[in-house]
Length: 278
Image (cartoon, rainbow, N blue to C red; front, side):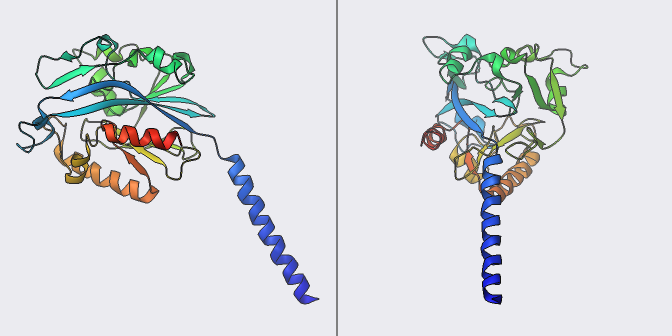
């Protein structure tokens, strides 16, 4: 009789645990991730992406991706590609001679291709405020812009004689200091990684149905060798801070067992596309 009772209790515990597991799975928010092309960038003078002469005489093709994150509590757009003035038939060689740039299509058309409209976004955030990440930012004026306070001050601070016009219409602002859990459930986390700019940030997304969470680099790295060799571009805000942020980023990626996606890498754009379309 005692054995029967013990067996019954054991089965009840297992059943209870299975029920809890199923209940937990059912209550997990459905998070979707979409990637879009905000531009094509041919770097004609790759040496600017090093502190020395490592890449002198080399060139490299970059993509310029931006992302849509769908969550039950709202939609977030991450980064904004190149300006829409660059939706032109032929690529544009900008005056410095470093970049040849072009954007394939407008934000409105690209969002339509995945079933979204500009008005569908409650939140907007950028890895940082360089021109290849702020392109269509002004379209996001009805969304709340989530930005590191120091990055905001660097581009739109009251004391600035000249403010960034590409961000002028963003008046709904949430200034943060450090890491930020966007929806409060651990599925979408902005990771503070200063160095490329004063308030640079990366983005962690736990996408429903994917084995590993996705970790978007922003411009922590620009291409694979950059990550492997911890290469720091010549135009970064702070070299020491960049290297410290790389260490923080890699530790976080390891802790979360995340799939790192280098946002400017055509290879990683293709890799993420395959993961999302499985």
